[in-house]
Image 1 (cartoon, rainbow, N blue to C red):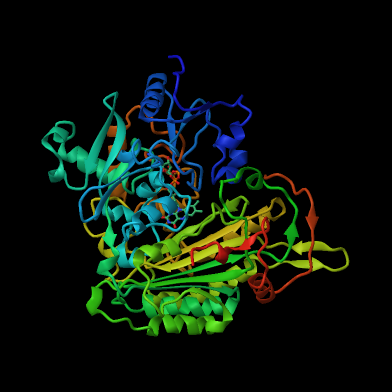
Image 2: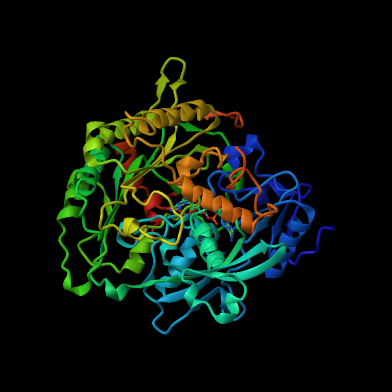
Length: 594
Ligand SMILES: Cc1cc2nc3c(=O)[nH]c(=O)nc-3n(C[C@H](O)[C@H](O)[C@H](O)COP(=O)(O)OP(=O)(O)OC[C@H]3O[C@@H](n4cnc5c(N)ncnc54)[C@H](O)[C@@H]3O)c2cc1C
């Protein structure tokens, strides 16, 4: 079959901008694997293009990788060989209220139900809801798109108080290739809500299977998601809500004290109120600067992105959601204890304060990080989940261990005589969040859920990512390996006896071989494989090894320059007092909405 004509642009390897168009978040980390090299990238201009691409793949025995925001950590939204990539970044957008009205619409006068196209970034979607003082839980990266995010959960700062974004899906629209017929259909959370006409197309079991599999099963493996209808929340029901966002210089003891609160107050108390969400982020880097021009520096050029800089720092996000409404009064004891552990108010920069009420639709904007990637570097990524008790975490001294790991992970030294770097650290990004307790909605929504997200008994989430310049690759790899060996997956592990992973934080390309880490039961995995077999029997949506149900050196440094070392404390305050100048980087905290 001849390659069809598309309304949108098609980019092939012989096009001058092929590498640029292939570029996505995982590109630099998997260059040597050659997995992000589709035979063609089809930038679908409309749904007709989507259908044509799917049918072309179906009739030619090749596969389609679906990419909307391109944020999949291990490149699963791309492909290679003869397979093609369908790029939906512009297809279901809301640019023109008349032309694109299907891609954003309120479904009821109360504005508690909204239908939205998948090409929205989280930043755009969040801002659109705020126009009506509405919000919903979701993740914290401005440029992640709804296309993938809906299917991988939407884990974020409202996880304890509200659960996952995907918990609020009422229905979604998906294009499948079922019985060789390419067709769009709506799939409902509750089959009873379907019209009689819609029911003619799909049985109740098929509907429930697709709902279960698409939300949490394995993104992009069942069809092309185009729209989703979500239940959203009103600010006015939570009138006293509070938040805290504060940045502090990185310090090992400060981090440990902040983590101790998470373990000793939150994990320890199974009844801890669901109003509270608490997350700690760390951005750290070794005390050297290099002048290597990286792949990401060349290609990560999203328009309108600020050029940011940061010293080694800890950012604290805390929220009190006021779940019981106007009769509930705010008690600042918990947040005060966090501020005290951080070293007091004047030791850092407080940008959102719990001393005044802030609507939740504003807070959800405050929690979004406004950059495409932490470092313009390749990475080794890990997001671990733990259901360990506070007693176990204390017994294995997890907070000490992980604070040491971070301090060690970025330390380096310079030989004064030769000016050579003797031990190189890497650039670290870490995040710690409490999800659990019997009152947590992350936990509660997981009971009898029609979705397939795993590990809803998670108490703590811990992300430990190492980004590296070429000369740091081995150090970064060894740092992550030690975290794996000591942190998870054995009876003496500091964080969790089991190795439990979230699909959105994937790091193993072979999903089948690694499935026990991602799915919390074999029964669930088998059911998902069967659904995959039913809805994608010819493998149209099986473009790579990170698909469910299958069998089981980076560029050299160009130049390095060593700068005098500054302590994290000095670097932090130097940047805090930096003058802002056009064309110069701004501190990360100044790019957040205040
Ligand atoms: C910097 C960064 C920060 C992140 N922060 C968070 C966070 O705070 N919380 C959180 O929960 N997650 C987070 N994630 C993970 C992210 O939410 C998921 O990877 C999400 O699936 C990305 O969606 P996407 O459309 O942007 O990416 P893509 O790479 O385009 O897609 C991700 C997956 O979904 C599939 N897919 C995408 N669009 C469609 C579609 N329309 N139809 C069918 N399949 C599709 C793809 O094939 C791929 O497998 C983060 C990722 C990054 C890189």
